[in-house]
Length: 522
View 1 (cartoon, rainbow, N blue to C red):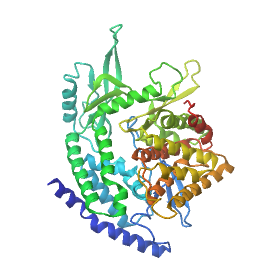
View 2: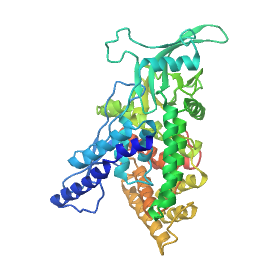
View 3: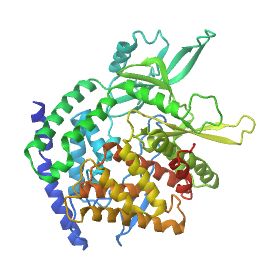
């Protein structure tokens, strides 16, 4: 029954997708453009970093537009980052239907699309960009489910001190205090009475209460089993090299692992503890540059996670990008360094990387200096740590080699090592394939290295884009990498883009070198 439902919902794409391709080609012919593209290639594409939109102008050059949306949702915001003004009606209709269908099929299919959006080693860039739109399609569940989930997890939670902030006026737009919602869970604002074990004094603090949507686990497990069966079937009975390269069973198994972590909030609680330990968030130090919400002891279960609220004074980092005044630019410069160094620390020192980074998951809290009220300090807060990635040894070496290649202009060696370390590759089975792959990596690195004339600043050098292009070459040449590597690269694209928007003059190599030498600090 479920298989039939999926087939019926997806079947219109068998007509819509070819139609979109034909209309796109006809549109390009009329505009005098080359027609060697696939479905959706002529729509606007994401720029070299998230937070900017890349769009082709009439001369074929790319225009980069800042597009960070402000939001009143302070703990779990989202931002739109794409501009599709150059698409045609057919591509718009096809993608809108595809995204709507994935959303209607349930959380596993929404997450499948979101996960595919990070796999630039498997799918073309324009497909990844389009699937990223699933981040903005969120549903909410009713209060009754939240109440039942809290009661199931903690018993009489209100008598224990947990209160969900709700409005007595049910006619308001948000009577249940919902501050964010995603494909798997939604978040309520609340308060928690905490007792000091030494003094027995009580204190009431603001908290964020994250609750899984109804039947999330059972729906996900059902659809994951169907996806795995389908992937195994395709891999077994379609003996095409392109299908083998996709390694569908392994890809679905990797996605299943990611999805299962999303539907167990205890894992997110554990991730938060690891991040807080890595960044020493519990230490009473000032100033504190980086922070993660602290899970409340005794208030974490499979379906519910209660964590410290970021505070009413915390705002999405995107708000700071709209302030071009002298004071605003100075504030942005203060934010850029800690933001970039935090990510470099995750990748090169801790090997534990937040893999769901977007501007809505990065907040900023202003802290006033007690002795000098005019001296503001800024703390960057990372949210939503359910997906965290650790790279395997070979992929960490590849990433380090690519960073060193930018400095030393030795992309050929880096490309050769990537082929030799790959668990699966088809370069060596093609005459000259290994040399061709390494030469293309060398050309990419040389292009970026040449920009040293302008200084290795975020404004001149886009390492995230370099890594994205290398992943695209891995896809085309059949060089397999670990899925975690692709997720880390996408996160790097987002963070590098934010850093560039904050301070394009920040020197990337000066920031990265201490971490490459394993001596960096935020």
